[in-house]
Amino acid sequence: MPLRAEVRANFNVTAAWEFFDKTEGLPYGYHNFLFGWIDTSLDNWPPLLPAGFVPIVFSILEDFLPNTTNVFIDQALNKRLGTTGLNLD
Image 1 (cartoon, rainbow, N blue to C red):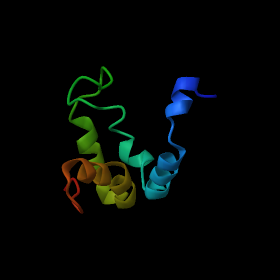
Image 2 (cartoon, rainbow, N blue to C red):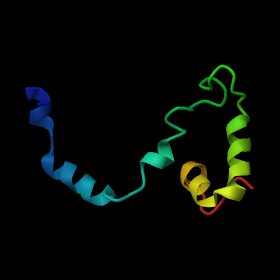
Image 3 (spheres, rainbow, N blue to C red):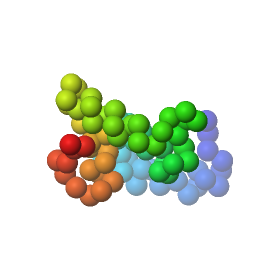
């Protein structure tokens, strides 16, 4: 889709490429998987899903699928908390 003329006039192609070059290859999708859907502590859960369900399930899954839980929850939580290497245990 083409940009509107006013937006196109303000678009900085050089800055866009610089941003892309700086962020290319960084993990994005998995880190935002849960947080794109659940952005409050209680209000975004499906009606029958208790708020404590996801942390409990991922804590259990961490014993069986450590790489998967690391990608889906541990890295995302560490990113948001400004920590590294922490998990749900």
